[in-house]
Amino acid sequence: MVTYFSNIYRGIFTILIGMSQTWKALFRPAITLHYPTERWELPTNARGILFNNADDCIGCYKCARACPVNCIYIDTVKALPEEDLGKASMGNPIRQHLIRFDIDMFKCCFCDDCTLVCPTECLYMTDEYENAVFSRDNGIYHFSKYSPEEALALKTREVEQEMEKAKAKEAALAAKKAAAGGEAPRRERPVSA
Figure 1 (cartoon, rainbow, N blue to C red):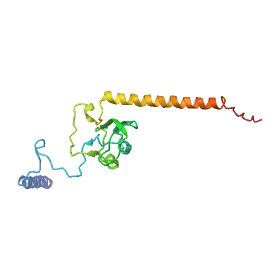
Figure 2 (cartoon, helix red, strand yellow):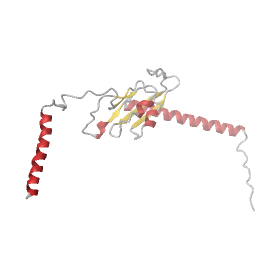
Figure 3 (cartoon, rainbow, N blue to C red):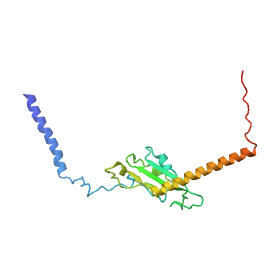
Figure 4 (cartoon, rainbow, N blue to C red):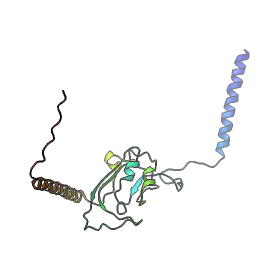
């Protein structure tokens, strides 16, 4: 009989403790926000979606090497000596065409390592943090200055230049052989008994 009344007492006591917390919270101002219309003020060092200013990027690959999850994809083509691609905002000369600079934000872990190593500070984190999309393709951000057709033309030009260099090297090697009087004699290997 004693346990019966002690159980009733404990039940009422715990209800009163819970209700006291409710009554305290009832008279406090609300701390929740009506999300889409109201938003929290983000701190200045908040890490959001990455952005690359392609006009300042020199294509040094430092950000891609620093990324621990390999979410940055870069392709460059060396500029011809007579081409002047200008300078980045920090004064660094741009010597390569940036034909591809893609960031897969679904792989990004928001570590900020890529922005710290960027010599031109063209890669930075914005204060935008909402990246919910309906398609996975929309989570890959493209920052190239060139259209796919222009990028293909630049890549083709680079391949043609490499082929010409290889042919010139081969011709120089053949001319060197001809000047030496044919093939150089091979040294005989000693036969071990």
